[in-house]
Image (cartoon, rainbow, N blue to C red; front, side, top):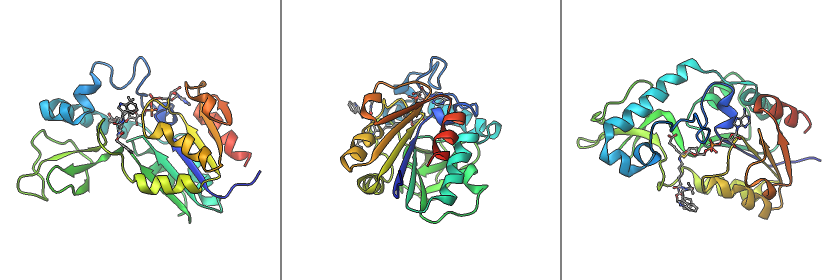
Length: 236
Ligand code: BJW
């Protein structure tokens, strides 16, 4: 079966074997924190120091993790895919970016971090986004607005995910949609499979185990991402 326009959606499961905890595992990232406290605009307004501390710790952890065979398989695929390939990640880590940087540039390939990036900060007043590698203080002054402060460039609950128009356009045009390592618990990403199906695409779920939305997919490939992802894409 040959395909031209590919959309791949990734979630925390693709980074799990690199050592980045998933969200909804019992030892997940929010362990010890209520989601309302650290992943909502209301939580940030109530206690910016707690929220900044939470993201500072996660930003520091990036130095201890590396892309794994699943990130590398997608980066390799990008260099040989002959049509359009949009990789949409819900992950705020930089593991796809690092895997891609190790490969030659790929025409027709694009990566979108729809829930933001740990290594970026955003001015609360101007909205300007800038690279941010170190810690961010609760009252970190913004260089872009005299009254602005810097916040993590992360999409919290109730906020609009990034580049939705671009993603919707790609879903309308895709003929293969692959969802990797995501529980499908969070919208709008959880609805991408239906948009792809509506466009007539073949839809595939790759996960450790069938998710609650597995019946929405044409096919399921189950196993650890470092094995299942390279194996699946080697068949294309
Ligand atoms: C492996 C593996 C291995 C493990 N190999 N696999 C009611 C109904 C519908 C929607 C809503 C509703 N009430 C509210 C909403 C909207 C809300 C929402 O979806 N809420 C749900 C809880 C119901 N969504 C929003 O608010 C979003 N914005 C929005 O909707 O704006 C309006 C809009 C309107 C119209 C169009 C578009 C938008 C924003 C959502 C922001 C999500 N942000 C977070 C946190 C970021 C901060 C942070 O990082 O701390 O992003 S939530 C969190 O979940 C994070 C993730 O990106 C996201 C998804 O999680 P993911 O990646 O799926 O991880 P897990 O842990 O859930 O799953 C891991 C999977 O991996 C599992 O399946 C494992 O089996 C698997 N796995 N090891 C392969 N080795």
